Image 1 (cartoon, protein in one colour):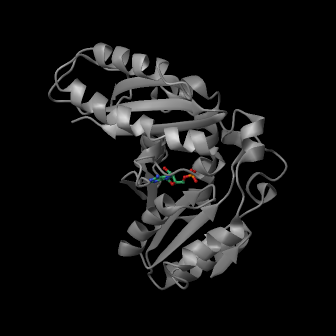
Image 2 (cartoon, rainbow, N blue to C red):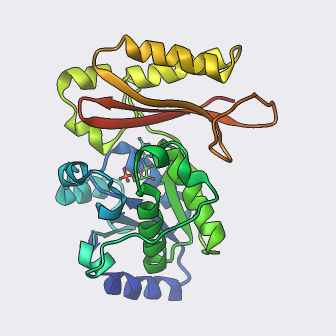
Length: 283
Ligand code: AMP
C-alpha cells in the first residue's frame, strides 16, 4: 500500500490519476482506525477507482491539550487494517503537522451560518474552526470527486456540507451510517482508552438514545430531555454533558415539533475522562 507523507507526493499522484480520468474518493481520519472508518472506505471503493485515506491528528481541532496528547497514533496497524480491504486501490496520506501547517499551527475563522454554535460548538472552543481548516486544506490537496464522513459526528458532517457549499468546492459529500459494536456502543478511536468498567457501561448511551426516540413519539422534546437527564443522574459511571433534540438542518434545539421537519437526538457524555458522543435519527 502506498503511504504518502507530503502534499507534493499527493498532488503528483492525483495529477496522474486525473489524467487517466479516474474517480477519486476521500476519507479524512485521525487514525486509530476501526470498522467504522473502514465502512466509509468501503463506501468510497464502491463508486471511485481510488480512495485516499488521510491519517492526521489535527492539533487545531482539539480544545484540550491532554486529549490531543493522548489521542492514539497507530499508523502501522491502520495500514494493515486498510490492507484487509484493498492494497492497490487505497492510498494513505499521513502528513506531518509541518506538511499541513508549515510553522503556523492555527485555524482560519469560519462562519457556518450558526451550525458551529450548537452542541459541540458550545462545549469545544474553536473545534469547528479547526475542522473547517483541516478539511478545506485536505480537499485542496487531494481534490477528490467524492468524500465520506460519518453520521457519528453529525454536526461535523453538516458543517462540511456547508463548507463545500460556501466555498464552492467541487466535491460530493456522502454521510455514512454510524457503525456500532455489538453492544450498541458507537465505534470510536477513543473507546480503546476506556477502562473495563466504563467500556461495559458505555452502551447505556445508545440504549438511552433508543428509548428517547420511542418517547419522542408521544412526548415533547423537553419532557424527553428531562427523562434522559434523570436516567444519567442515576448512572454512577457516565456523566451527561448534553442531551439535545435538534432540527437536522439548523441543529437548533426543537421547541415545537413539526411533521415537516427531521430531528435527531444527540448525546455527549464523559466515561471517566473520556468524552463520548452519539446520536440517533428520530423520524
Ligand atoms: P475520526 O478519525 O474520529 O476523525 O473519524 C474520521 C471519520 O470517520 C469521520 O467522518 C467520522 O464521523 C467517521 N467515523 C468515526 N467513527 C465512526 C463510526 N462508528 N461509524 C461511522 N463513521 C465513523
